[in-house]
Image (cartoon, rainbow, N blue to C red; front, top):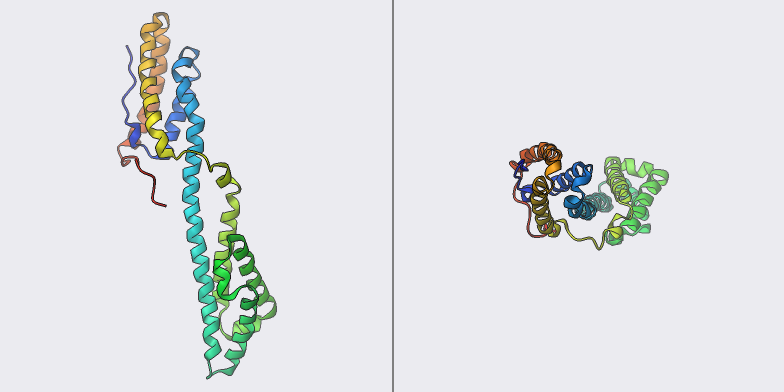
Length: 242
């Protein structure tokens, strides 16, 4: 009797774990004789997919926070440089240029800008950059702050583009269970599947060769993922630190 090769799926990363279940389901559902033994894992598959999307979204959310911090720092750098020239008594022209630039900073939030919500901050920084380039380019050049303003623009647009790419995914996945919580139950379902598939060779003797062939095809897939298990640390049993 053919047997399925062993694999510790608990040691697969979340992405590999989901892909393993999906691949096994895809292979086994093609054989009607195994419809009953694969049914539970087949039902698990879309649940795991949504949960994995949520896990990826959590990573993206942290990326957004990091990007927001970068543009905040870029804004504070530019604002501080402009502020500093307001005290440049050695070069009165710098004081005048500072006043002109600060006019636009003040119009769009000044020191409060970094406390705005994401969209409002994005719009405010865009307005500052646009207004200065359109109405105070000479003053910007006087203080040699063109590169600082360009850096602020780049960080703001980077944030805007990445934030927009997320769409409504956060809201859609708000009530989806975390991936790490699903692993324990799916692990049990997989073990049951292994036992049930192997048992079909005894329960349906006339189709034993067909089931044995299916097991061989599943084993080919298992071999691929066993290579990943050897280099993957234990899967987390507690939620990741936000």
